[in-house]
Every structure is written in structure tokens, then in C-alpha cells.
Length: 117
Image (tube, rainbow, N blue to C red):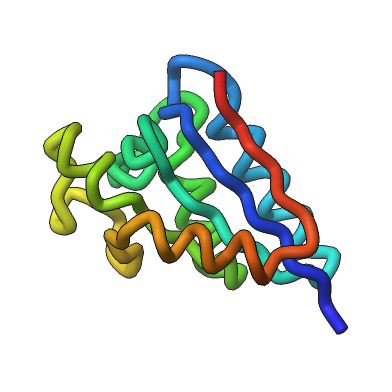
């Protein structure tokens, strides 16, 4: 039976390496056959806001790859709302949800990693 890893990302892209690191860990865990959940919290919703190509490290592209590989991603709706990130601003297919969705993931997880700063 596959183990479940839940990642809490509290940092946005381009302020630190945490967004890139969290996404690379998520992709590697999926590659190894684990179930992976990624909850974008505090400044994390900014990662899902990056939809265009960039000539430098692109957390949005890593997030799209994670979605394609089966990583379950959710955005804290209050955090997004506080930053004026609405559903149409985020990469398609990522729901804006309440914190209770994250607590449910915590209960179901074998391991939890937090990327914050």
C-alpha cells in the first residue's frame, strides 16, 4: 500500500527556494509511488498564480508537472482571497478550499512536511 505525504507550503515563489523545493520533493515522492498532497497556505497561493512561461526558475511550471503526475493540490481560500488571488487567477484544476480540507489530509497522511520561513 502506498504511503501518503502531505506538504504544507507557506511561502510564495521568488522570495525563497521553498516553493521549488516543495514541488521537487512532491514530484520525487510521486515518482517513487507515494500519494502526495500539496496545500498552498499563507503566501503559497502565489505559486498557483504563475501561469506564463518564465526565463528563470518557474514554480508554476513545476506545479503543472506535479498536477500531471497526480499530486493533489488545494489552495487555502482565505489565504488566496487575502492576496486577491481568485479561482480564475490560479492554474486550472486547483480548488480553493477551507482549512478543514487540510486537516483531513493531515489525518490521512503518513508524513507531513512544512516549507515555511
